[in-house]
Each structure stands twice: as C-alpha cells, then as structure tokens.
Image (cartoon, rainbow, N blue to C red; front, side, top):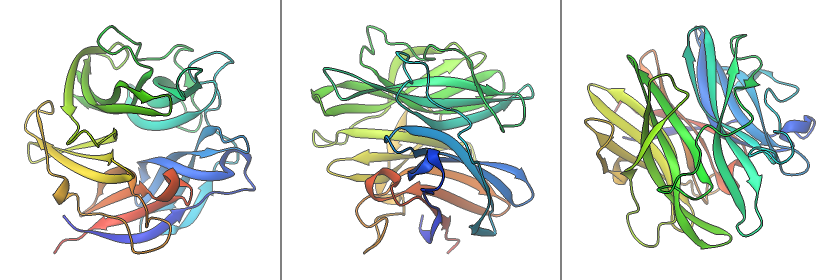
Length: 301
C-alpha cells in the first residue's frame, strides 16, 4: 500500500466552544452521493473532549460545507465514567437507528485517566444522540480489571456483532498505561461477551500502546489499521482470515510521518473507508490531532 496525502481537511475552530483546539479520532459516514459526514471530537477551553461533526464533499474535501455549532454529545453527569470528555469511535446503523460507540474520559486519582466505552443512540439520522445508559457499555472484569476498555470498532455480520477494542494490561506508572487490542461478540450490539482474546499484541517491551482499530473485510480477508506507540504513534496494519487471529504487517501500512508540518512527528487514529473506486484514510498527526484531521487516498499504482 502507498497512500497519497491530501493535507488537512478539518481544523480546530477557536470560535466554536466545543473545538477550541484539536479535531481527533475521525469517523466518516456517507450521507448521499459524494457527501460525507465526519464525526470527531474537539476540545473546549478546559481541554475536555466533545463530539460534533463536519460535512464534506469527498471530491473537494478541504471545503467544509457544514460544521455543528454545538456538540452532538456532551459531558456525562458529574461522577459518571464520561464526565470529563467524550470522543467518537464507531457508528453502526441498525433498525433505523444509529449506534454511536464512544470513549468516555474520566479523571482518576492514582492513575492519570480512565477511558471506557459508552453508547449513544440517534433516531434522527445522526443529527443528535442520547445516551443509551449513564453507565459504561464495557464493564471491568477480573480478566480486564483496568479502567481502559475503549476505542471500539464494531462490524455487524448477519446476526453477529463483532467488536475490536482497546484493553489495558496494566500501568507502568500513573501516567503510562499499556494496552493492546482484543475481541468481543454480541447478538444485539448491547451486551458483549469478552473472553480476553488478544488480536493485536505488543511487538516488543518498548511498545506501550495499540489503539483505535479500524477493520474492513475485503475479498474474504479482514484488514485492520491501528495505531502503535513506542515513543510516538505510527499507523500499523494487520490481516486475518477470521477476524480473531491476526498477523501484523506494519511495513505494509503505507503511511508515515511527513518531513515537516502538522504530521511530522506522529500519525495515528486512522479511519479507512471505500467510496466508489477509491480507498480513503482519515487520520490525525502531531499532538493527538491538535492540527486537525488529514486525508489520504490509496494509490492505485
């Protein structure tokens, strides 16, 4: 694979209170024709993540056609798992509703943060969302006792819902968790069976984070893009025949940092999707999306 970078397409808007800085963890959904809605989180003046979206024409992606003036999902109630921020991860359309699987941020005392998956549902085609529950969707267990259960990718295959998600294996110290990518299944997308199956594991002891899985199934092969971090994030790639046992092929990911500019230090949080005859990637760069959201197109040669 070789990706052709098209530059930043969505940038922070200090004039909008919900995205004073950052535009991070994008998810694209086709509306009609070449029109796409890109969900993402910005950060307010207090550095708290909030969810909104922008609409673009994929043929002219740098012309933002519309952007929400207010967040479509704000902070959870004080004391809840998402009272310090919300970030979108994946959307599934089912039964005339949109299921938004999101990341809830919560400050902790002994460790820096908790990141746990929540669910919000839209009945108006994604314009607004309401929480399915004030409690998280993925609860801690004896096999997964740490408060990082997050960043899910969810695909519905027939009557089976499949999830690839981020799960902590421990904390090195209060500011450094270690987390890899695991697998879960559900019959309705609400209650998830988790057996602790690891899909993507650390390549070495120096690798601390495996984040934001994005899975496509093409030609009976499951393909996953994800972020991996030693010192700084890079985008990795893996393949699987069944979606459970994966082989890392990071050298085939095809997108790395630029020589200078907004993505010269790190690249991460890729979302890959097909449209007509092209394959696109939305991604973030330096400082976890501080510059905004970039677009790349897969080269056909």
